[in-house]
Image (cartoon, rainbow, N blue to C red; front, side, top):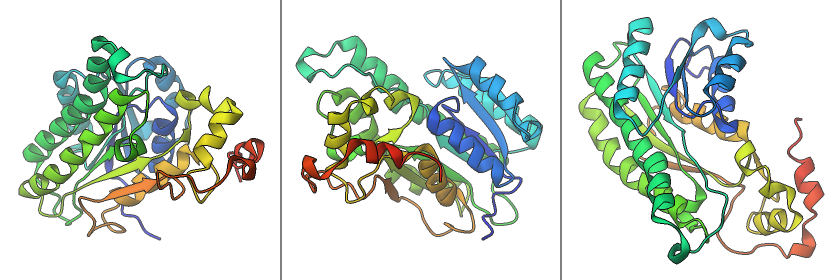
Length: 282
């Protein structure tokens, strides 16, 4: 099925992480041109991209999403190479591992998480929309696409991680406002949000080694399995497609195995190792 993503320019923040690399692979397979951004793991991203057969269609940049100027410069660089940026995926984020109730959480941690996860997504969107305002819409009617990567923590909450939940919940406000603003710049522009649940990435690796954690997660989902990074990437690619999702805007696509925020299975009905086996490639 034709996605319309071939030769589109896609900017991805947080491209060095598990979901970020899966996003890069997925868009590359569709023939897109890639502006890949990372910060703390930039060197690893650069080395990985250089080893890919599609590396001639990619630029990499070290970008701190807390710095609006750096995001503006990234878009300027992409436009200099390819004239415009068609799609932007605000994926960069952190998840502090320590589980703490709000009254024990430091001010520094709360501010840092919100700064990276929520304000970083805001500055990312701002730079993309400013770039779109300068370039204008495509003549072929393929609308621009902005995708936020949220979390089920923003929908259901996550005890011990109020800072993260707060940041991801804030993306609902961005989504519902910017879907109305983007059409002032591009009449076919769309803004959507992909909301992963627990996903097998390096950020979650330690937690997923704990059998009790696996059972606690899987018991809330009809599909007793953990998402793979490529599951998230495919959902993002779908919503980014100017052909497959041309009439979808302001939507939240939850990729979490049907999670409802309530217990559906007793822990005795869940085999942790079987859940892990489902993470292996087909």
